[in-house]
Image (cartoon, rainbow, N blue to C red; front, side, top):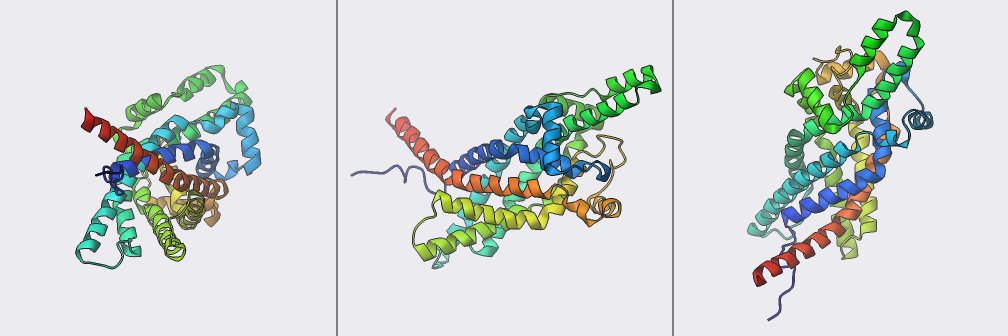
Length: 336
């Protein structure tokens, strides 16, 4: 009697999905990270410092080199791998629960309904936010720090005659760590552990982003498979993932802006250190108008859509390879 590798590692294997999601997220992040840098800096800069998209690219490259577009990439790669691993593990665990319930109740289709997809996304998203918010606080600090240092350096040069002693003291004070670990330790030392959870409220509100994204993706995928009577290809998954993310990010972008600003609150003059989500939204509208809530939306939507599209295209392929690898490892373990 022959056996295939599939029964050894079932299709709803949570760990395989989590590893595939983490791998797909890392590949997607590396491919689109310059757009993350551009959108994050646009979100946190003041209205008077607003810069056009192409001008910002030229400015960063001129001041910091091409590496400036990848500031904080190491923490972002670590963050996205942990984020996607946690998210997909809990999403697939919840999906398995609903599918088992559908089997017990003898429902004709075991595919997730729209409501079930939303519940699965809410559970997975909430767990992910709580576990990974500190990583993204550090990443946002690193992404925006280099631009801030350059601006401060220019201001110091322009006011050199104001006093050498003050200038030297200011430069020493402005010197900041350049590594992920250094940024984390400096943040803990200067602002305390609570700083790692700045922006967690808007981040929890933003759980609606993946809920909308994955619900739309799942429903479009189910509709495609019902009509074509075959599984989606990586190319189709690419476009369905892009459509889902475009819809979700366009709706939730103001909260993304507020979350980024709360991540750097207390990092400059400290005026926003104790500001809550509602106060932050009101302040942005008062100082910059409603358009202030949508700063950097161009590169952010482009980056988010491409990242999601690549993720969905990579994930199924990586899942299949992970299943095969784990199946082969299980067989070797049995033989041993």
